[in-house]
Amino acid sequence: MTTTQRVATASPVSQTSVSQGRWLLVFILGYLALMADGADVMMYGLTLTRIKDDFGLSNVQAGALGSLTLLGMAVGGILGGWASDRIGRVRVVVWALALFSLGAGLLGLTHSFVEFAIVRFIGSLGIGSMVLVTTLVAEYVPTERRSLILGALQTGISAGYIVVIALSSWILPHYGWRTLYYVSAIPVVFALAIKFAVPEPASWRASQAIERTSQRRWRDSRYHVIFSNRQTRTLFILWTLASVFILSGFYGLNNWLPTYLEKELHIKFSSLTGYMIGTYVVAFIGKIFAGWLGDRWSRRGVYVLGCVGAALFLPVIIFWHTRENIAVLMLFFGFLYGVPLGTIGTFMSESFATSIRGTAVGGSYNLGRFCSGAAPIVIGFLATQFSIGLGFLVVGAVFFLSGVTALFIPDRLYDTDRPSTP
Image (cartoon, rainbow, N blue to C red):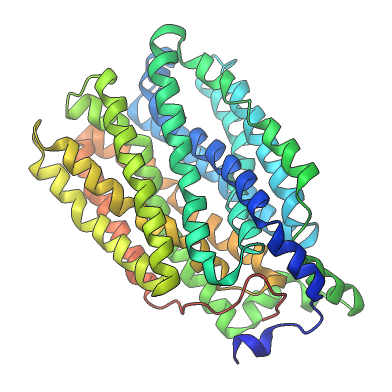
């Protein structure tokens, strides 16, 4: 069945035109939301050494906090994806952004492993739904530029990394890790801006209108629709596997990279921030390049090449780094690391129809998050028994497996700015 055959004919042209005319505002607010998301993810890695010392944590306990965060993300993301198909993308994004921003601020008030773990788990329920920012923007942007725009959107996460790295170089030495978490509550204002400035996408509203005119039965539940349709079921499983692998590498790397540079490469913290900012600035370029190439060539091809390239380059950093070349190696890796992250949003969103997109994207991506929760603990164990570098070799392997899995996912199945059903 072709894409055009699956597109509902009840889509009002006027609504689509309004959506396309508003995409720049949605992009800007979505970008700010992903900046907050990226800052939150990087903040834990930057404060990990100080939290360990403050609370007297072992490597495994420190890794467990990272894994508990991923568990909360998975639960929140799965529920948020389902809710976004029922009550709207915008409502879910607003509540998610407010929850994790305020939760991050409250972490500065914790004084034990248990307190930190409980607050972090609750806040991470909101982080899990931030994948829906990409779905929201994808349903607004013009088809011919979608991959480039969503690739640029993903640089918001890198921008968040850079902002929090820069802030940490000033705040951590003078005011401590708690102050950094207090500052992280500020993005709650972005949630208010999205709530009052962004309407639900026209394709989602049209899909809801079609549903209201049909008689719903339990067999019409979104997960039943996903698993009763052979193609959709296969795509859901493949995206879950691809997400397990890519997110295991992503979170394992981000949780332990600052510690690796500081403890095993003996880079001073003052220099470490410069290395990491350079890496993520280059990741900007990688993401935008991936989006541009995805529009002109293939979303799948770009994603696979990015995963395999990052996988093959990690051993180069581990075995052949020197004080003279580590900066260049980190910059080159940053570009490769950015490529799959720059195209995954478009590639995944176009794999599922409007009526189940939130459930399918939120479900598969966050099941991947749930399973990837073992990655920080595994690297923590390997750091204790051997070295963090060995853990990063495992990261390379899972990047490679994500690329291999994506080879079986077709390109451009659905146009996200038009209402569609499986």
